[in-house]
Image 1 (tube, helix red, strand yellow):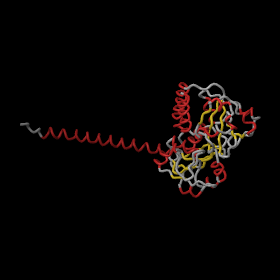
Image 2 (cartoon, rainbow, N blue to C red):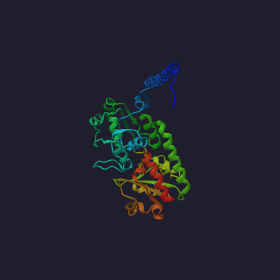
Image 3 (cartoon, one colour):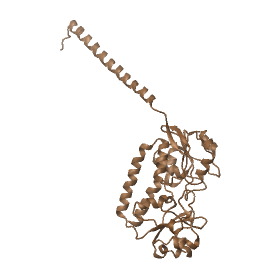
Image 4 (cartoon, helix red, strand yellow):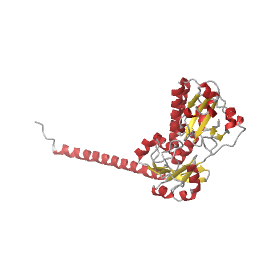
Length: 337
């Protein structure tokens, strides 16, 4: 049986215990003080940033949380950047479902975020944009939606800071940079570009590029012959893989380029002279597919059609966003691997 310590001994231990409790309490106070000292630092972080646009300097949120996208051709970038899109236009060239619905490339991401569709029409619905309560509006780029945004720019800026991608910027990687900068997600661009560069290297290493220059034929709904210049997004991208775009501009007498500078019309009489490259890519954008063009005497007599060195690419390859570029590389790898 243990003996009870003398009273004097217990008395000597009590101050030591009290001192220990005081030390613990003091450490807790210091911990609280340290945690609270972080709060002023966070409060000092800027809540806005300034980005330079063709419309001048625009003050945007440091990291936007409610983004409205006025062009379906730009929305894919924001989903690739994991940026929050509360509402977006859904029209994508050659993919648009006139009955509504998100394009397949980013449908799952849009549904996961709870993104709503902006109504498509001859004019942009400013009311629908305002109803989404955005803290940032992104628009511009290529196509009719760019024109609509330009016309209503002043009304859009009254709703939220508005950044328009210039129509002259056709390269998808440049569009990605502009969109990422506007949304405050520029830190995510290097990883996306690294993945793209890795895929280019992988595809280039396993494909066999057909001999000869390439002509890019655009098939539109009006059935008129259109060609794509070497400076457009698709030929520029495939040049990284070793495909050499034919100098169709010189052969056509340096014609005027349409819209964003990524196509031009050729007269039926000149097509056989301008599109005489040994290899061709056909891109149906609401027009006839390659198989139908092959039955048309205007195209069937072209060297590429006669030699069987004509290949079809989807409309999303023509003006690709990031996902479109990656998907095009995959398709090229499958076709020529």
